[in-house]
Structure formats: C-alpha cells, structure tokens
Length: 535
Image (cartoon, rainbow, N blue to C red; front, side, top):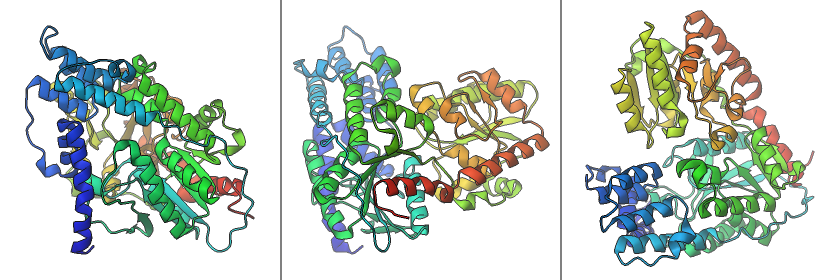
C-alpha cells in the first residue's frame, strides 16, 4: 500500500476510536489496546476502574465479582449496578432510569443505543423464489463475514478461509468481504484491498470515517452494494451474525442475486453463555438477538449450518427443511499428512510425558478447569500427565492459577500463528474437549477436534450432541464437569499402542467424512437449490 493510501485510512481509524472514547473512555482504551497491544500495561487495582474495564471488555463474570466488592452503601454502587445490568441485558429497565452521575448516564445511553440498534429488523423476512438461472463461466460466490485472517484468528475466520479456498479449488470464483471498517478499525491500516490470502481475495469496505452506530447498517449496505455491482457474484453468502445477513439480503433483493446465510452459531446463545447463562434468558438482549437471528434464517433464500442438531433447531424456528443444508466443519487435506511427534517436541521444547490438552479460545465453558483437575488425579496415580492449552482468552489467567495451586504442569503459549498450530497439535498424546453442558455447547460443533483427529490424535470429550458429532465412532465421551470421569477416559488411552490404534481410527474417519473436498457437496446442493448451479 502507498503512503497516501495509508494516510487516507487514518480518519477511519481515528473516528472509530474517538467514537468509542466518547461513548465510554474505558471502552475506547480497550479498543485501542486491542488494535495496539504494545499499549497494554499494568491496570489499576481501583475497584471502579476494574469494573469499567470489565464492562468495556464485555466480561460479565468479572464485572459481577468486582461489583460484589463495592460497598452497597457507597455513592457509586447504584450506577455501577446499572452498568452491570446493561451487560446482563436488562436494557429497558436501565433505559428508564435517570441517574445523575457520569457512569450511570453512560449506562443509560448504552442501554438506549443497544435497544435502538438491536430493534432494527432484518427486513424482508420472506425468501424469494428460487432463481432458475444458468450461470455461464465460473460460479461467483461472495462470502460476507464480520472479520478475517490475518488480523482475527479464530475458528470462524479459519473456516471462512478454508471454505473459500476449497471453492476456488473447484474452479468457482469465491471471494470474501468483511464488515464495514474492518480491518482498519482493528488497527491494521496497511493491508491491501483486496488482500489475497492463500489465493483467496478479501475485499474491504472502508468509508472515510465510521458512521454512528445507528447508521452502520445503512453505510454497510451502500458499500457492499457497490462491491456486488463490481464483482457481480451469482450468490451472496453471508455468515453469522444477523447484521451480515440483513445487509446481504437488502443488497441481494435490490439486485436479484440469491442470498444464502450460514448459521455458524446461534449468536443469542453465544451471548447467553457469556452473560449470566440461563438467568439472562428472559433479558431484552437475548430476546432481541433471537428475534433478529430468526428473521435472518427465515429471510435467507437458503441456509447452511454446521451440524444436524443445528439444522433441527433452525427448522424448529419455521424454516422449510428443504432450504437448510449441513456443511460440517472439516480439515484441509494437508492435515492428514503423517506427523512426527518427537520432532515437534524437540522443536517446541516439550519434554516427553503424557500430554493432554487442547487448542481453543480459553473461555470458562470450555471446561479446562475440569481438565486440570483430571490431570491432577492422574498424577496422584503416578502417571506423568501434563497439560497443554494453546490459545488465549478471558479464562487463561484463572486456569494458570488453578493449575499452579494443585501442582499440575501447564504449558500455555497463548495464541500462536495459524501456520504453527499443526506443530502444537503434534506434541499431544490426547486431545481433550471437556466442554461444559450449556445450550451453546450442545448445539455448536467445534473445529479443532477434527484437526486433532486428522493428525492421528485420539480425542476424549464431554457427552454432548455437538461434541459427539465431531468425534470418530467409539471415541470416549464422559459426563461434563466430571474430572474423575475425564481422568478415567484418559487413563484408558495411557498405553501407547492403544493411543496409536485409536488415533488411526480417528484419522481414517476424518479422511472419509470430514475433509473440505467432501464437504463441498453441501455447498453444491445449496447453490443448486438457489438455481445458481445446474447439472
């Protein structure tokens, strides 16, 4: 990118940051630290500052813990409680209050702003008739997503890359476009547009400045419409969340382009799991998110999703069964190459032992505390069992503290580049998926256990429908949140010969059913249903 292009993006980055600071200084600082990690440093131990930071980072559990430590008879408690209520989704209740201090007024403004934005309906909730058009040349697919590699490294961004890459391998003109402002508003002012990642073009929608939050969808649709006019896709394929779907549907309807929607998660359940669980099910935020997501599912011309369980849930919301297609998580063919555990351990400095671990975003509902407790039980029995967790997240600090308290060796390198993930897989003896029993974990299938099995690593997991769906037949499934049961499952794989046989069965199952070339059949079916593919 030229220096002039870089300079032109400064107002966009600055306007996004300034708007966050104006809404909430703590939120603005958190956004700045996310974009520029070198600015992170030690944070104040003052309770009010800690509370503001937890709210800015959307960490409900942390905010509740800090609130408990603030004296209820103090002058700040009422406004602090309002701020936590917003995080818990009690928007209408907060919006009706009239606090006089700045923190309380910020909470009220935030509640009213969220009610306004989440109250915007998806729009046309009736799918269009299938378009019986014969596409000449390459099938054009434009994937509309929130964020992407290399700035955001997560299961969803990795899935986006692998879908588009596999579709291009079929000869389709698969492209990706990210949400308005990304990646400039996330601190990357220098990436090209389009940015080509392993052969996949990523387009960016970059206004001169970020619009106010209530106008984001309007600007998003205007910029996406111009891109659609330029690249002329045969299908627009949006992915979770509902905002991407709403904008894609608006643009597609105006131009006669069919729109598919990929439900990679039920976003309202994702929110619920991070904001109080079942206690927040009757909150305004949950209800509004569910309504908007249901509208997106009903309005899309076709829906793709990750599992049979998710398909059943989508149909239960009123979507016609023939419009819903399962495109499960899968792995690239190179993951099936033989692994060399000894070489990987030497290169990463990992001692020989029985290593049980995972690769994931470290949230509390991943169940890694159960894993650490299970490893402690195994060590008491004389096994040299150790834990490896690759990834970062809000639960990592507490996990390290827990492991140290019960004398469990824990290696946690944090987030590593995508190019190095396979090497970290290769040091594991057993991959653990000890997810807690939540609505989200029952419905949404993970990606990483498939990658582990492709590397010939046996997996033990919680006995939940979405977990069972991504494990090879015969893999150990145990009660969630039960360290003893998890320890017993790992113990059954303690012998190297048993592990090798289980790992080979898992690898063969992935090779037969869960590679991206095999999963492409689901996208063929969906696009054929839309009339964008024939024959």
